[in-house]
Image 1 (cartoon, rainbow, N blue to C red):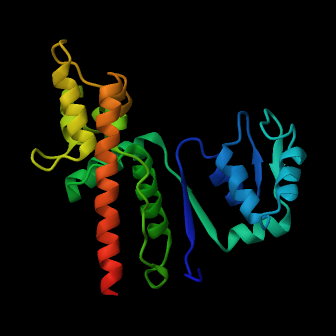
Image 2 (cartoon, rainbow, N blue to C red; image 1 turned 45 degrees about the vertical axis):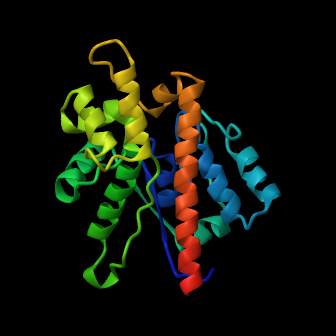
Length: 231
């Protein structure tokens, strides 16, 4: 809508998108992440035929093994002025989760930690005059990634659940459901590996989960409507 922004594409150890943006070429063994094709569709001006052509012109097409993909100059230039990128390995992801919690009291999920680490990398590469405010978009909830939380903090699964649930008295709906699910199981010390385990307990949990999410959406919608009425 006219806002002068630059997107920063943060990738984890699967850095295919970062390599493609940095070099205009992709030579790899494995599968091209699906978001690469989405981005190339936009960079091609929303031309489905052009995007499909890029897929078919990769060698072998789309999901290549020892082949590769080379961006047309027009597509690469479009990306160059709009999208920067950085790759974050697993060790830096875990360290970012821990250090952000120590500094801010906020627990990042690993996907969002990749974005925060990438923003810090980008900020370190810019001159002071070129630095601009950066907005990192949260991707998920840390309770989905309890083994990763435990690895980042070097703690037990139970401690990871407590961290991901938020402080007592201020737990989010997801954390409350996970804590209740833990208490409802007979096995001592049982901890759900993530929010999906909460849902697996049965339809009653799905209904409660849906109700909690709906209530939060309605609360936010009402707040947004009230804000609009004051503008």
